[in-house]
Length: 160
Image 1 (cartoon, helix red, strand yellow):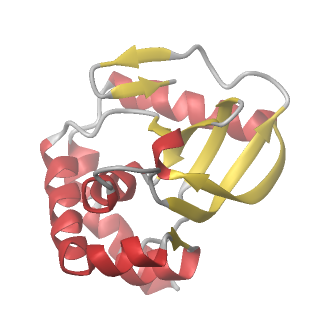
Image 2 (cartoon, rainbow, N blue to C red; image 1 turned 180 degrees about the vertical axis):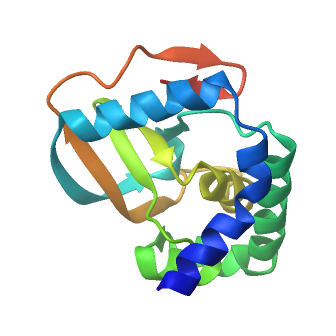
Image 3 (cartoon, one colour; image 1 turned 45 degrees about the vertical axis):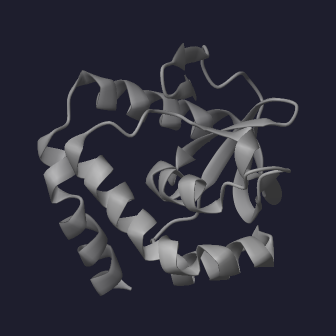
């Protein structure tokens, strides 16, 4: 377990070097989510209903998302055929120390505050030309007692 955390932090070292004020604001929002949560449960959520809390636009994050998408490409058809990706399957495909974590901002609309890179890698590979998007299973959902934060729209989608 300690080795897993060590690898996680080692892989994040380039991202830590690029931190700025936006990261402090994001940390404040995530802290607020944790402080105001009244419950935590696991949900099945359509991929199309999940918006990232922030865009994936830094070189290190883009490189990681691209590498993950390349890992998914050979098995994309199998994942689409399965139709739902659960915790265990997601961990097989894109290992991580944490689950994808969500907050529901409106009925049926979610913002992911953990796992945005994994979601960015999954979207292109799992998008269907027609019909509904695939469903993600067993995503960690936090129900809040107060609104998470003001919602803003960016070029890459909504974030809070």
